Length: 167
Ligand code: HEC
Image (cartoon, rainbow, N blue to C red; front, side):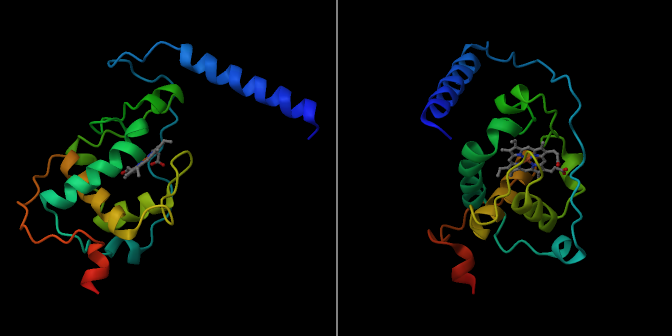
């Protein structure tokens, strides 16, 4: 790419960013129009479906999952998991509502772990970005979003990667 082309590209990109910033904030009640939604399309193997969640479903791990969710997932799936994140709005995605218990009840923990790992365009794959422990924490947080109440903390939860400790 020549210097001039590069400069032009940069100017155009900056212009696009600026234009995006000028957009009004989405109304919280707005419904995205286009139906880009599909049920998660990837084939999930029986082995992945049957994988057991090694991380206890308790308040400590749910809170850790919540933190990751806030930075990695909420911009699409919405802060409360209702599918109304800003990016979902901008991309006209209409996303599953995790707060409806029927939705995630159909998925095993192993399935959710696999979906989070593989992603599905435009959802980014997390394998290699997040540790297994972080992905299980997310699975637990999704369960909490869909209305399940986590157990009380034991006070003995390790700070470090729980999966390393369990080995
Ligand atoms: C760029 C937007 C985007 C981001 C970021 C994103 N997702 Fe998704 N996600 C989607 C879309 C679109 C779907 C629905 C289509 C599909 O299932 O393939 C989806 C589907 C899912 C499903 C499947 C629900 C079901 O039962 O079919 C789960 C679980 C999920 N996402 C969890 C997460 C988690 C956890 C994160 C953060 C680590 C995340 N997603 C980040 C866009 C996103």
